Length: 171
Image 1 (cartoon, rainbow, N blue to C red):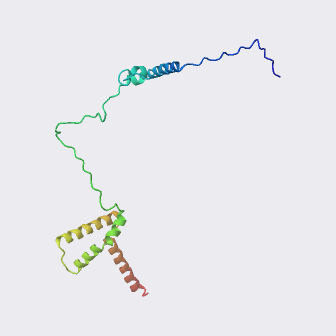
Image 2 (image 1 turned 90 degrees about the vertical axis):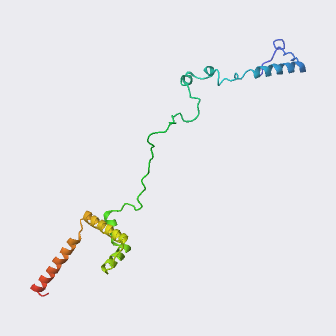
Image 3 (image 1 turned 135 degrees about the vertical axis):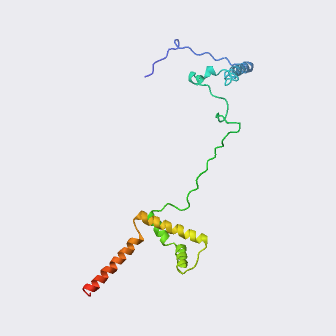
């Protein structure tokens, strides 16, 4: 169980001496003075960076200037460089077949062609527009391998075949 303690072997701690108010105040002043001087020295960033910084940072000097360091020509240049962006075409690129279908179904073109067939004269601007559209239709038909002449030849051959059938068999 418990070991008996001998009274002769154990020393009692003596009663601690209470400090006076003056002693306490003096110790507080000393602590404050030590604490006040324990910080970094004034101006440590500008003056002595070698004590706190590593050698890698010290070897590479940073430029203290703020902003871009690229040189700007102050004199008048001989040739001013002006980039002009090409305006995008208003019409999206269509396949030749889609563009041909669009031109064949154009109401304005149909109306102007009907006026021409009726014998009316178009003004210069309308005539120029019609010619441009008809030229574009011809280009697209050549790209696609179509032509009006082939259609006419096929129709003539069909008429010839029909005539031959009528003459031969009488069907």
